[in-house]
Image (cartoon, rainbow, N blue to C red):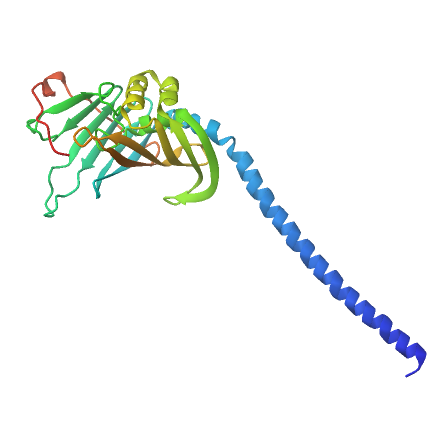
Length: 289
């Protein structure tokens, strides 16, 4: 092999190695571009979602514009090593602050139902319950002034009033945007944060101001950790809130996790409150749950 041929081969080898190096750099460049694209998409989504605290504080107002919806509720309580779950289902009229839920209490240890399902009517400043038990005639309603109960009816009825739950978010102090996911097949943005009940009361509608003030004083802590899932219209699709209150009998904190699912926006929600003569005026026996 002469000197010229050896030189040509060396140049070809350098060219081959250069081509491989260029390919790697291009690959890295492409990967880097893809990474930037993904990061940019996430950043754009966060930007599109807006400031989490501001978005959550106006979530109740967004429900006003939605008119009405169907609602499913779940309330889990844990005390003394025992966990029970109370479930509800119904409709809610956000414009008139009226709702109707059928609430099912947990079965007793023997497996038989302790109660017939309780019908609850939610109204500004009041909760009406039928099939309440505790000595109340089956054809009568019990009325509870939500401003007089220590939890502001966030826990009392075994279901959190959907609009009151949304108004708790008016007291959002800290919140982060977690990312996109789905609730019931609907794309949503997931937020996680903490609300303060006293702050919520100050920003709440007139009907919920006193109940939330009562809750701020009555719970073991006014701080409410939450996970909120909002659709692209800013409507709450799922809201999980965690409360802590002191059991009157045991004087120990009880942990309560309330989950509200909202769907079927625009569904008919014709809620009629009881007539005065249908409301029970007698004494209600103290029950055990």
